[in-house]
Image (cartoon, rainbow, N blue to C red; front, side, top):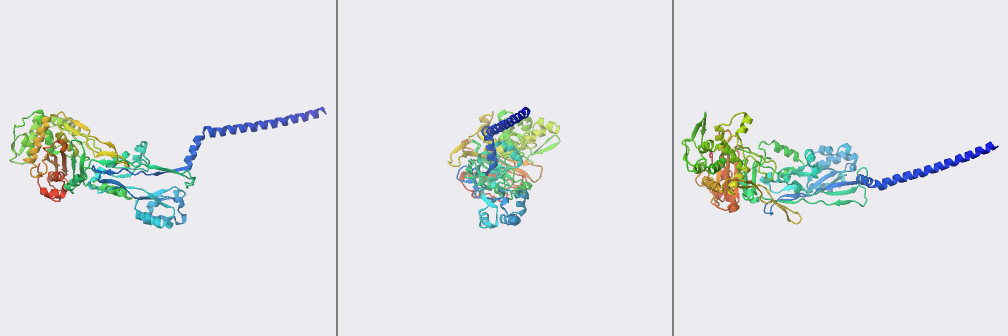
Length: 626
């Protein structure tokens, strides 16, 4: 019996142990779960709440309006934001049984192909409640047509989407540029600068260079959505308003730009009008130009392809993106070196018989036999005598001197203008020729370089800087097309671009004074006496006719400034360049003549042309003239 009683006690003690163990286990589990709950809520709570918000809150970008662009007077807007709309499709809200009909109806209304909508909204997107953009730049009439028939367009929505519009841009297209959607390659580069993959950015001109100033700051709209992207009203939706970009005021004078545009006409080439004492570009024309507005349409890709395929390269700004032999305009550099270095007396004459032989080659002056006769430096520049510069350049100034003075004027180096893709031009040297062609520099090379031919290349803007240095007694200011940045709300000036010297020459003021005097002689008794006949202003300058290897085609140059007898602050530099691709006409100085007449009388180009006796639409002179 004692054994039976002992077994009962053992069972009782075993039961108590299990009860206590279960109790301890429950307490332990409770403590563990409480601790983990505390860890999730207190220690990692902010992390998980952030993740929850990321999942639950959807952000939609509200594009900021770009800053506007004005001419220098602030009275003529050149680039604005026009009212326009974007059309979106929410795929999950389009009934599956009528999806194809809705897409076809929408495409017809928008004037696009149904395949384009199907491409943007593929079957894999049909379950999404996220809005997908299918068209931009939709006008009010089209949008209203969709709104009036809303029942025919389930799942279709629209929103305001201002479009960049350029007003009467014409030849300003190369300065203003245009905007477009950021590409994948551009996004890779600009991601770290705060750009998004669906941004609209400047692609050319000041739109590109000053994009970060013009673009503003996009706003954001926050919405609570479920896992499918469907909006879930929560009462917590909010909006961060966009901030408009700042406005630009250009240095361009719209009236001078129009006069330059008319004076150039439909001739391949360029015109530059610049204030030499500030570097401000008052006008810059490059023909042919393009319409900046075509890039705002839904067919911008095809339009861009057409421009790229155009053999006349309308996208190229010939004033800064193309370089040419400067021809006889370069004799201004030789004249400077001859005077400054005193390597050949200014009053000593050289006889020009119209042609000379050097080695086994015959060099012909532009005035063939009997030539110019005896000419000193002043007459040689006025009459643009090739033989004088061939001989003095080759035998007295030498290639080292020519190269030195070319670089003193800034040739072979970009000016740094605030426009994209400026080229540097080229100043050849004996060392370069030996590396490039494995040939020694010859006296014939020096002769070619002396009159701006051979390997020498320069942009119209570099020649404008050359004239600016002469006007300013040796100082060149950085060319620029933007004058000010202004606040869009108050109009207050945020940034004003002051004149920035980029070159200071060692050449004496006395030399520059003599060069100015000789350049005036080109107009009064020299090669430009006939075409530059305006009485509104005294002009000084140099003509140039660049050979390109064709018997009936030459580039026509005229580089100049005026008034000749006024303080530098009152002067303007005018450079005209007519390409040899045009049927031959010596139009460079004639175009400049019209521009000077227009600037200093306030007349439009047509009136100015009549006053100086030229027709804007007809050639004035045929035949090769230096």
